[in-house]
Image (cartoon, rainbow, N blue to C red):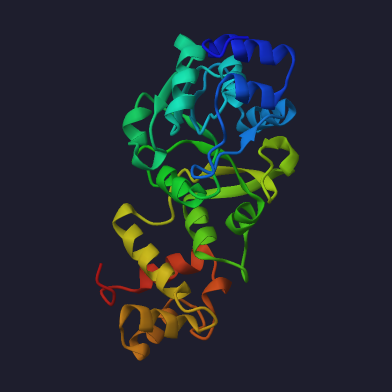
Length: 289
């Protein structure tokens, strides 16, 4: 194989899978700074595509294609594939390899206007996210003006567990994710499926976006402001935490919480999404947006 021909290198690899040899041939070393852990287990790749429910009518946005192993499976099954890769070295090689079979974009998902990029219609997101940006990337995708129908994302197992958590173990992450979607962990992945091996286990989680959000867009900012203030001071009553964080009168905050049918003495991690929604609806003009 010639390191000057990444397509040939990948084709040869598929005949005789040797990940370390492939990385040497492509002159690519996983970057710790970018949090790169390359998935190499093809059984897992096929499971991810199956979980995503992809067919030849599906437009897919892949985040973090890496060496393109998942991209290859997506191209075989999807209608169109757009992949965003931050690493310039990998993006260039993927562009050469996939040519017209996939649209490869070098860029940062956190700085990409997803709605403009995927403006043609419905699409789904499939991603192997670096642990360091997983939460920010998920938020960016969920809050897009034109969001995906659903996301199938590989993240650290503990992050996936926090996203699906229920009272009394809610967090800012679980509340934010569940405001926009219904998350469900699909399966776990051991560290041996990656090069280099991470020190943690991973999980694949699917987020199905709600057809209608529980609050109109004009109240989203209030929802997140209230919710975050409730979690701002852990182990405190929700009324005290909100009042202290937003510099509001405790008695007024307590009254609003009671109007929402919630015990002010509860802690934020015990509240579910419908209760936060009721709190927003009961807040009236008490909280300035």
